[in-house]
Length: 294
Image (cartoon, rainbow, N blue to C red; front, top):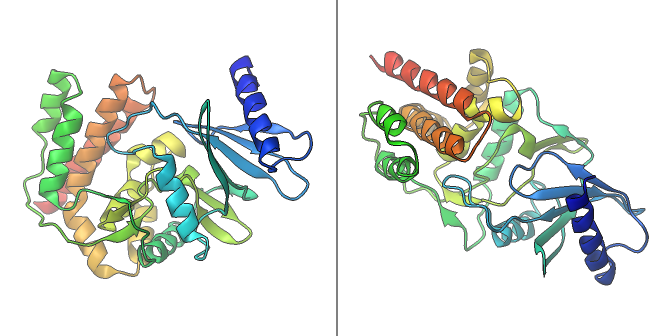
């Protein structure tokens, strides 16, 4: 653990002792899953915990970073076995802190059908109040992409603008509960099955949002190291029980690849090391949808 990490853990351990969360010396292990916030696994005799220190200065056009949204989601989902158990939330002088139960398991690697079932269960779960609404339909997705591209270099942004899908897909009007960031490292495979973690950007809206992010080639390259195969993608689409949602996703798929390509461009501006690879994968997937529609 480096000096900065050690400084944070000393401050946080003092807070946790004061609040009765820790009663004796504990081992702090930095977790590498989060790319925006700092996370530690902290050992305790009565069960390990995850301590998340929010980076409140982080700004992201696709994945907001809001501690109160995570608190709201974890409180609401406690009865549904879809998330870890929230233990504590407080505001410290070094930032917002969320503490939840550590799940002994590993990040999801295979069996897309299980993820399809998990996300469908989530989408049927009542949503808590106060969550943001995701873009719904092609007009809203276009507006979001225009905002993202306005922060990107003109030449590359113009190249992507020329690949804008043409089909108009009306808004669904759906307000389903969404995780909104169901990448592989946010799905934990443990003894109790699959559980979603890192709820800093939950939302309500069209289930296609979660479907698109899970199937995104760029997201799998960034978090799993390899994109889904065509067979894995087919397995997910076949296993998701709501056929109307899958039919709608297939119509919206070009728009979601176009948006994720824009997001990868934005990531490149921020210095993301895998942004170029993700951009190329999303553009390739986008062009494949064009050929399929001919």
